[in-house]
Length: 362
Image (cartoon, rainbow, N blue to C red; front, side, top):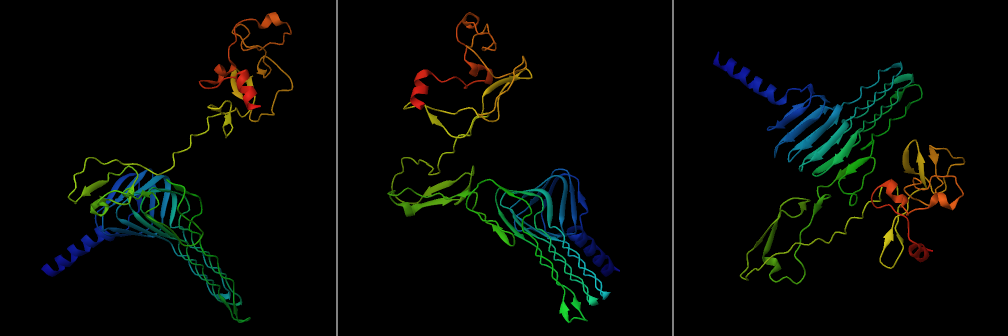
């Protein structure tokens, strides 16, 4: 009797660790032990944290139906899409089904997590006497939006299913196509140092890390230990000196190129020199007043062919009395007053060039 109770207890414990989790409805979940799960549907934002030396294996795919699934390491997530069913055999063999997607929807990988996604294999075509079924296509590894922040991501498209054998012709029907690693673009936190192709692709853990080195000429450089190295952006790095010299101070510098300033809204890319020390952006189009709002045309060659009180792009001498020169009058007296720069209509920074700046530019 005791033996039966012990066996039952073990079965319950095993079910708690390896049973299929039907769906997540959002929130957070932490995997503290290895888990083998069936197909999962995520509804709403969810965070899966996998502890060190823990592997969560999902067979049948993860469908992020809504929200975003954030996978945080340092543990491992292994996801395989469902295998396509084989075609039935007969006088006319049926086609094999396509393999399932490993991960669909929005997913973020961070915190040093290791994520391996493999599309399901396509099913084989059924054998036929006169006509055989074609093989199913391999499934896609990532069919949604992958945002990679840190860790290691490996994406494998599923293998193609084989075509069925045609008895009457003594040959095989066509196989399916191998699945893609990524169906959509991958959003990286840095834009260089990686290569993604359809097929098997690995995103290494060093892509978003920086290597810390001692500057050339530092005495006892071999007596310094740096940890961690490489390190992710924003991560604390500790330097320890084990030599006998007296250390007065440590200075950290970066050899990364400074980030380019973004182009202001409404401006064209590229700066123009208007003096030996000054550069400016030009607006993408002429100034206009339409629907009670000030804006720029989309292109510098755009203009109104007719004018109205609510569709205006022809401005005379700008004064407060003439509302930035919005008048059809040809009388100089109607434009008298102190000049008010048209740039004020578009916010801080926009202005009209001076005559000296135009002369320098031209």
